[in-house]
Amino acid sequence: MQVRLALLSNAGGSGKTTLAVHLAYLLANEGFRVALIDLDPQGSVSLFCGLPRPKGSQTIAAVLQEDFQGNWPLIPLWQEHLQNVEACQGEMGLVKTINELVLHERGAYLLGDRIADYPLPHDLVIFDCPATLGPLPLIALSACTHLLIPVQVEPKSADGSSKLLEWLYHTNHRLRLKPEPQIIGFVPNQYDQRLAIHRNILAQLLPQLEKLKIHGFAPIRFSSEFKNASGLGVPLHLYRPNHPACADFSLIVSKLVELLKKKD
Image 1: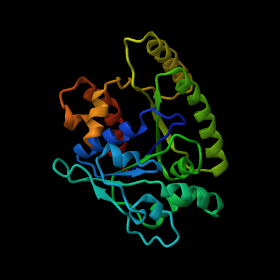
Image 2: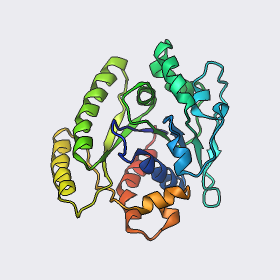
Image 3: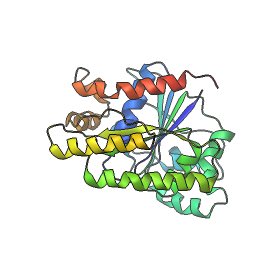
């Protein structure tokens, strides 16, 4: 089955793009065809993947225009290592798109409409969303089949997660999404076990998620090597393949592989 995975967070610095880029690489490395779609006007995917700044006609903004005819502007990633992962870039033109989505009669469903009319052939489509609860995360929510929620292990981010869940439940009901996207789980990010505040927040977060019947994955540790890798436009697994943080993604990857191997 095709899995369309939205990475949502209403707090900046939660590690959405880091998670999106690494999952794209790791699932492609498992043999699946992956599309990474950047819905962030800041173009974070371009930065993290070492891509040149795109033209407006070669971004996801073009896909959301009325004259789109199905030519998805996809760029191959890490071609020296993989042949089955591509990105659709984001850029500041998406700011204008936000205003257009608000006025469009199918605004909230427009991305899902594009995928229905012009299907992507990929096994996994990842939507990297901006850190808001506005129109761009909204179109990702209506287009996705599954959700993954990264959360920085800090007081403000953890508190914001409850507001994100309220928004999700309210929005699913308002949009009448059937079936509703499935929350795969929360991913604690930038975790430093040396810090008492991180240990305490994690100890509180996981039981709260369990009460809500939401899975909490093991945390992805903090390491400056993630920044060093993104500075070169590659995932950590290509920059430092023996770094211990490379193993932190394994349980999430296993869950996605399980979903991807399910029959429709």
